[in-house]
Image (cartoon, rainbow, N blue to C red; front, top):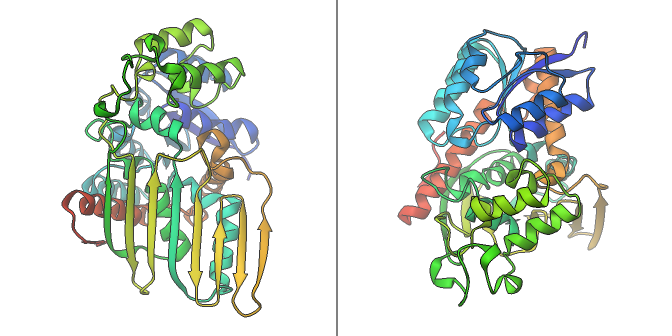
Length: 418
């Protein structure tokens, strides 16, 4: 690479900032030259971290787009419902685009994004970071090698974690489908996309069941207040915001999710946020409506079947997968693979080393870095093939999510039609 790829960032929240940090770690390959972020504190902090020149940090992406093409590529990391317009605008200007998942929330918007980037001839990488982890590479390598024979069925679990559910999907930005999107799209589009990638194709039919069972007003403990700071039973509640965020602040753990709650890491800022903001509310007194558990059943063209389970009611843990083949079984927990051979009746453990947790705080097990590495390489070499989550692959996985959610709501079996 003769020169570093230049990047503009639209949305300097946790995801945008995390993706952009890759450039700071690899200055010979990429550098950030502009940012659009409406929140002044975030915008100014981001500009300082990346040493942006005066005027390179603006409050609205439209102002950035009005300047024409000021970078080789743009990272679009706005809220889920705000993806379509900036993608269309920057694609028309010739920007290569890294788009945070989900790419869009409706079939029409997804198809419009695909059409726009294909017409413009630009690279699009959707933020399906699980495709890019060393763990996924090793697991897919076992499946593709034929070592366990023909895949017959799969069990895949996403243990969201009790506190993660409370943070993001009860109190947080993704608590309501009408303001954000369904739980399946917001959180688990990663998983349906990952299954498609590992198995080499999308399902042809899906069904789904799930509901909001626990985080409801009728389950509120006797004596509970509307906010954790005022609650007489807070010390006996596993979902205490006071304890969860207070302990993180006391230990100096200033990354996600605490960085979503406060911009300044002081006890005073946290108390104000918990007293006035959404993250201090009782989990039984919020306006949430997304499910807290869901299953998806899938049938693939080969005849293989798969089940996916998303549940809030777990410890914080990595995703767990069992793949059943005609010659063996593969089990994975996000960090280690175990392959059982039917002929020899022996098991081999494949350790992959520490890569961080498979969540935002842990860089998704190396997936965040892997995505940025692939995207920058694709832009620098004009090779879209370096990206594993391009427009067509991502469109199909989004259509699968939309079909599964239709099935859950209508209690039907839905066909996935690319």
